[in-house]
Length: 223
Length: 223
Ligand SMILES: Nc1ncnc2c1ncn2[C@@H]1O[C@H](COP(=O)(O)OP(=O)(O)OP(=O)(O)O)[C@@H](O)[C@H]1O
Ligand SMILES: Nc1ncnc2c1ncn2[C@@H]1O[C@H](COP(=O)(O)OP(=O)(O)OP(=O)(O)O)[C@@H](O)[C@H]1O
Ligand SMILES: [Ca+2]
Ligand SMILES: [Ca+2]
Ligand SMILES: [Ca+2]
Ligand SMILES: [Ca+2]
Image (cartoon, rainbow over all chains, first blue to last red; front, top):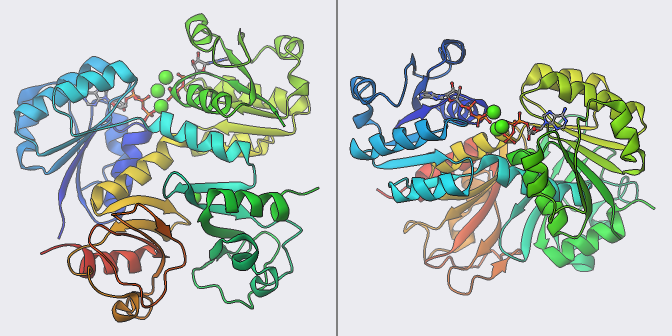
């Protein structure tokens, strides 16, 4: 069941969206004003066209009306982003996601009917700030205000020990849901209690934030 | 225990990193060549200075040597990003994180000693693509190229059934690592096999992407 998407603006963000949708087998129409960008996506997207999305005639000719979900990833040119969104809305596109530059831009986009407004740089900045504060936490998924899943690098206090030996569940109230091997880069999503943690491994841990941070303080931060 | 950070380049990404580190009580030195950017951070960062980070003399005068971790978030000007990283390395900064524009940029950064290279737009693009493909997938943590953790809304094909009854592990190769209750908003990070899934619940599932997508196709997408 392929669905139809269009990505307008193939910068780093829009390009990545286009690439990932295509990799997952989706039909994607890729649009950019810059020929070199479009060429980059000729063998990736189902269709890649050089076009100015602020030109309503062009949008119509591309059959954009038949597309379920359009992602507008035009960056610096806020006016083009707004104008494109407005026209997509008028053409009756059901779902429009737009990348915003700032709060003012977001406000206008919502007013004119964007369904979803995103701030990739801002969101990623927050995420990175948290991983920087705790340099052992490689990645982080917030499940709720007080629960998370984190990827933690195995410290020398952990390497060589087994899960049953560490008894993380009883001692810290967290669960190890996966182990990423540093060497093979493989992921074991059903680690056994007898699993021995090796140098370079990453533990994927779920739990309450306070439990994770206790675990981290006692077992991860190297003296 | 405040640690000292510096953020060079206060664009959307660097600005967000600076804001979040400051919000978490960290000491941050904010640097940008553009006066208006620096003014924006005067009341946010511990120090905010207008300076060109490619000027070694300036970096020294700012006492950057005493800073534990420097984040280089210079964007378009790849040359400035590389030169700044090189000088920070020569000044003996222990931890240098750099935002890259593309793979070539990343390669050079690693060669000259950057400790961490990040691609905020690319990573966020992937994340958004996944949430776009499946509106049932509420959130997504990429563990590797082919493994993820996802939050999936319980569909009517699942509600009322137990984990043992669904036998997700045997049937789909994925594990349910947590259940978020729709009602109490509580999170159970050690769901038992006899746990019954209720309306409004969200399942947190870990597995290979292909297994998760098979699970989703058969048990989540409503007919
Ligand atoms: N009117 C338009 N129609 C189609 N594409 C456009 C239009 N205006 C700009 N673009 C394209 O949008 C893309 C993204 O724009 P820009 O580089 O300004 O954004 P950005 O926020 O810096 O991107 P990123 O951070 O994701 O790399 C560019 O490749 C640009 O050519
Ligand atoms: N040599 C330099 N020293 C200090 N700051 C610099 C230097 N060169 C550029 N900057 C600043 O870095 C910031 C980010 O650069 P730029 O806007 O090119 O990146 P970007 O990738 O488009 O950013 P974002 O997507 O995060 O908004 C800008 O505010 C710019 O003024
Ligand atoms: Ca950007
Ligand atoms: Ca910019
Ligand atoms: Ca840019
Ligand atoms: Ca990751």
